Image (cartoon, rainbow, N blue to C red; front, side, top):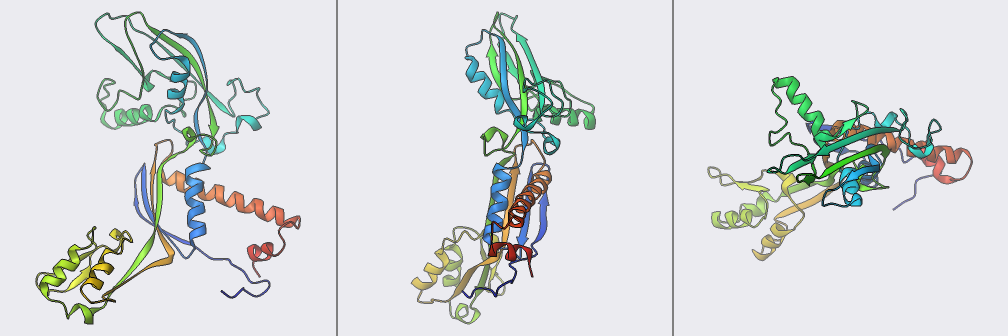
Length: 328
């Protein structure tokens, strides 16, 4: 590949098109960029967008069957609402406290107190039993239950979808009492801070059928070829008997239809290529932040990283790369 002339720019102008957007799910297209940028965005969404999670647990009383470390680990994995995480400070960088948790800038305090008194019933201690000092930061299921109560006016804490995330079960006489500190962090440090349940992207496929070769196939051969695809990419019109692409994005790059065409003696029946500048993203969140917030925060973090690169270039550390980043 030819190198660009000195001073030439690699600058591109990516475009995003949202296809589907829900609180915890998003599907969008990213065009006019390359795989390095797509993968950088994916990695930032998974590992570098900050959230809030329980990081310090001080257990006062624990007579349950689970040891202290086990309970602390389970508490850390409870997703907390983190819409304000981008504005919070990392505890290691906070100069307003000593890291004990009593700081409005870098941490949120939780308390939990539960004791089983009924001899016939097992008490389930869940995330609903956590009491936050900051109403903006609470377990995700608590926030959802509160929103449902506001919209419907009906809230039953014992309903199956509102019981919260199970922490431990207590029998009569057993007790759990603790104080927990939630702090800002990123998934690169620990998975409990990752806001993403899954983030994937695929190249958008470009599928072209050779109509002349297709017309040489019998109806049974066309049906057999369409069915050779593990996913429903093609369909056979029962009226016109023409094979068309019904869902190009269902193609998984398995090449089964290409092999089937070659087995029929019709190589070149279909041509399938990946568009190297077009990607389809699927994003699911843990609920700590919405899918929209995850995408926008990831872009913000990525831009901050690029700004840091430019600052290094101002010091003359990057040489020719700086010209490419800065443009002509």
